[in-house]
Amino acid sequence: MSQDSSEISYVWLNGKMLRYGEAKVSVLTHTLHYGTGAFEGIRAYQTTDGRTAIFRATEHYKRLYDSCKALALELDPSIDWIAASKEIIQKNGFKECYLRPLAYVGDQLRGLKMPAGTKAEVALIAWPWGKYMGDEGASKGIRVGVSSYRRPDVSTGLPWAKLTGGYLNSALARRQASLNGLDEAILLDMQGYVAEGSGENIFMVKNGVLYTPPQGAILPGITRDSVMQLARAMKIQVVEQAITRNQLYLADELFFTGTAVEVCPIREVDGHSIGTGRPGEITKMITDQFFKAVRGENAAFSQWLTYV
Image (cartoon, helix red, strand yellow):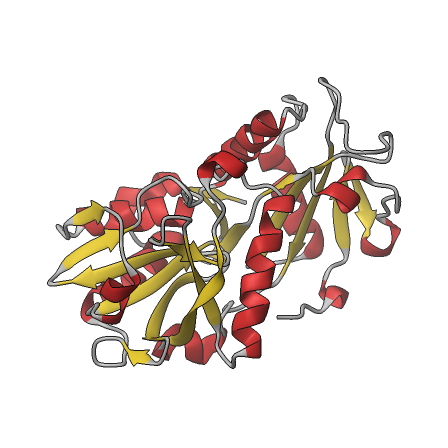
């Protein structure tokens, strides 16, 4: 999905607010060559009262620091990411947007070796981003396929860290799905169980119970956690357990979650119609409660919002 960069006026780079066209990095940037960076995806929503609120900003920025720590990349703890987020939203004049914080290794290194104490350079970009799967996909559900690419084993990388290099696997799976005429991919783990989408966590509804793969090969998403909390508040039973491809085909409902995709129903997997072939009741209930929370309509989850 391409984005129009003309909508971006300002970028925050290493503590300075710059015009988009003035924000430059070297072609020798280590992260560009070797994927040695960490990032986040965060959304800001216009709330019912007309203000703008960043969704679960604290949790996202904590994960950014955790990802850098896992990579042994030093991210300056004095950076006020919340203030920078508010500033870039205001500077660009956005009411709603997607925020992309990035911690990366600059051009001071050559080769693979990354010495202890390597300091991160930082950027923060914001842009308007509508429905990741389009309005029709978000409302009617999307068609997906189980990819031939697997989510790497937990021993081969850092699956709980949101690292730039870790997303090559996802890009390959997403491209394969597109070439097959599908909207998205589902990746299995190395044991053959369902892991997640190319950039989303997955949930399954069966007999009124909400299932999701356990933490392991998946990235434990912040939207995933939000949905689990919302479901439990609605007295829906939530179970984390291994899920097989066979179970996907027999599910009553399936949906993806993630910052970009929000809550998106899945209507077909590998040609198998899921449930009635339309978004199910639990999916619709969770979607409704999710958007009430992000728009400030659910006081029980008001702590998730940081107002600009």
